[in-house]
Length: 631
Ligand SMILES: Nc1ncnc2c1ncn2[C@@H]1O[C@H](COP(=O)(O)OP(=O)(O)OP(=O)(O)O)[C@@H](O)[C@H]1O
Image (tube, rainbow, N blue to C red; front, side, top):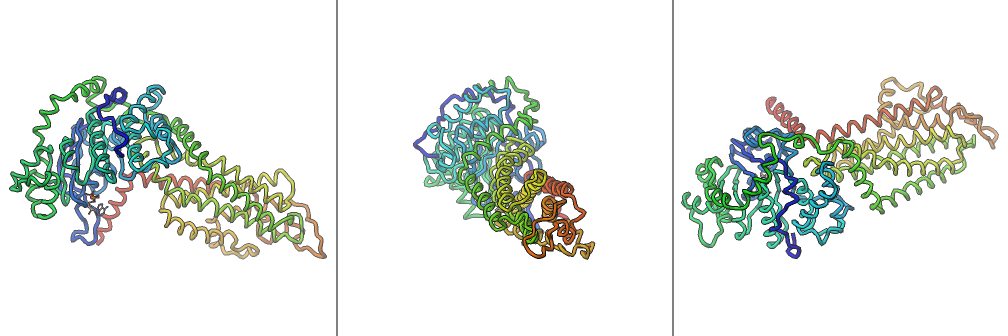
């Protein structure tokens, strides 16, 4: 957050205040313990948080501090609900046990990595965020006013029309905060928001967070060591060391607390630096300090209460609370503000804008299809009606299969993991449902994919002089395009499970056997063992080869023969020798369609599993427990 673009920390935030119709949220945790599997630990488990306690209130800015590796991010992840398995203890939200489904929708988690959607201006990104998060109840003019206010608050006016890839690091960070602020969530978690910022920007950042908290929001951030001059800006400081709470209270009470522990803070130190220095150089003091503060049960907050009662914050609280059901959640807290259909429409228009601007990818894809079509068409130029070259046409069919397989498996394998990183933040912060996202992702690529595939198919069909028969060409195209879509589904499946590096290895290792199986036994099908027939059927490419062959050769008149003898002048003979004489291209298409649906459903389930931390964590936790019991 650069100093040249000041944050408006003193602006009144009327628009945000108006949409803040949700109850303030206090988060309390009791005896919170978090363990991870660790084979080097004696018990097989390593405790990262050790029965810590605390309460973070609305209207306050809380800093979770501590030395590196103390457990700050771990605590934040657990409170935000990003990590749920391996957690013991109670997390209480407004005096009731936390219900993750509800809590997720009223909290925003701003991760350390400031990944924002590419090829959108700040204005567009904010408008899409507002449309998705504020729903249709709030009109366009009101949304524009909220955006204007948030943009001013974060000092982003000068780059309002700038595309995200041209923003500076600080501006990108501010944009990622702004995007989560548009619906004024009651709880905001920020992981290391000041990392990578200069002193001036840190100051602005902390003052901004303080300002947001004064809207009766609960703002909780992790921070390494705040600058001395800003320490007092936090309402509550929660210091963690080796998984224990060593201080919980107001910044002002830290010095008396340290004196009580017989570690009076020297004037050369700031209290924040000093407590971290103590736990570093005197690790045994962690237990003393933790015992003194009852591992977080005691809260040294006396001064804060007096200050707040005389501040203007009370007015804000009243304004918000009067139109809020304080006892429970409103309907809006439980469901998305938009239907899946409306989310899909907004996501599609966003993806359309991004795709249209991605010139290089559009051009590369266009030339890839064009060049491949010309290459394959030239290799098999004019052979389509030549009875002495029927076997060559069979090789041509395999080339078409290989083209669709490699093109459409490898691109998603490389692109999907990056796409997932982008959507993870939005999905976790409940901008949209996974269904809407997945439908959008599937549908958005469809028109271009079909157009480019048809271009490739027309080129290879015409150049290789295949019969000008509408039905044959239609089925040749339908099977070709469905092969591309199925390969794309397989690519999504691999991309949803593996990282880019692992995925590219897995992708090519999967394709080689699929291709081998597609051709296995051709020419001696009658002698293929039943077991191998089952194995062969796992390769969707096999159905592509058969489908394309039958579409081109089925029920054909004998071909022209310019030589003395053309063995396969009658293409039906080739089909018979290849064991395809009884096949129907429509059946092959339906089987390919089955694979298409299977891959896409599996990719969706894998995504769901990976993104629903509760489910995936629970399964991993359960598996680890079973392994442990067996040992
Ligand atoms: N899933 C895990 N498995 C094993 N160890 C873990 C896991 N998650 C965190 N840790 C360990 O727990 C400790 C606390 O991690 P955490 O990220 O919370 O630290 P931190 O206080 O945020 O540190 P930093 O300020 O350096 O980011 C570290 O030693 C880390 O290696």
